[in-house]
Length: 532
Image (tube, rainbow, N blue to C red; front, side, top):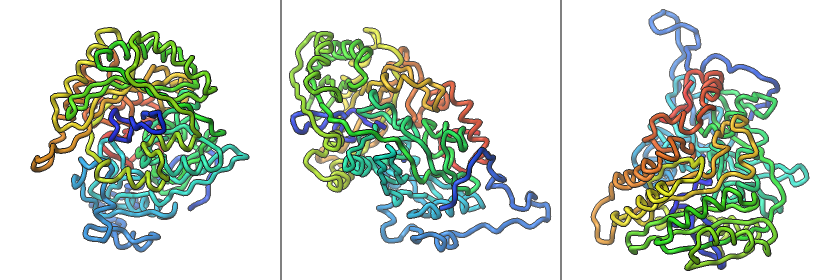
């Protein structure tokens, strides 16, 4: 992901630091293809109710708890409320899980899947708890894999083994300590698994590809309770689906093996204009980014900050070529915009520092960064949706984007909102749309519409999310004439009805076939899961 909204308080996408800004979910492996065993929700005897044949007893949470490394958390338990909390505070209290399993081993995860599959009720999977739809929780069992967070780096082999619960800041720190890198998102507390399974857009995307492109194998517990190591040879269709098909539909992932490469030096840049130049900025950025060197990544943002009565347009990004060549890379953009920026900065730092800068954590340790990201001042409620920009917007589309951002000044409780155009192309486009489940390979950019909010000083009670949902969805609707209905699964929006087509396009029928093979009874489900 990169899962990066428009404003600085949500994922710290626009943090100025160091003179520059980055904008910025225990069994043996088996070989060979195989079909899942009998559907886990089917009666064990093969006889239906009323047949007179005995059926298996419904398992109890107490029995499950006794099988886990750590006891289940139940409502009223110490740490329950903290453990039940998602990243987005708009979902606080929306769901009250019957139990939370704090999994520390692959065996814990497998036990939870078998429990749910033999009559224990539904389950939801959670790593970072960042699901935009709030689907990292539910009323039954929540399987929390954040305890599976180890990162082991094999520099000689060029791979890293990453636990499913590892968060981005932890992954980046472990890789940087060994001089290695992977392309991923910006939010420090996002789980690497959810990000990678949905695609994974970030500041090194054009140079290295999507996060899912780096996957070499995935350890997953499927609906039959089996622990599988899947890759291009073993359960190849399932591995295909896990590279862009989104998290939570096909099984409970417990570990990822990703290809890593030597960590680059990263030159960052930040260019800001007044909003009177917003249309020229977006127009010029579109023309420039389409032919940009793949070593250069950028985002173009149009932002509204109502409490300051402020509107701005900016382009920020990264360059991993020679630092002395950065000005030459930016020159065509400046010429295309025409107007000089009112603010400009650049710096060159190491990979580890660059990822902390992107997370808004300059000058802090990884631990401080993770703690700060969930502090009350940073953990603000937000609304978001997305689109996919297949080709440059015409002047009318650019004007519509600017007009919809400007309308945000009428939302006094909004901290910041607007639209982010995050460049694709480069290494992303080098892979065929059907080669992985991520279908948007030929697009110019992913587009994210976001709004964060807090009550105005002196306001009583909570602020309804409705105006902010309407704001971001209104932005999406205003551009659909040119972008179509496509969207990015990692920026899931419950209001998108035909989500299968929007997220996966022509790849959705194959995803449904994989779902039917590995989870025919729909054990792994949520409102926008892949359907068999």
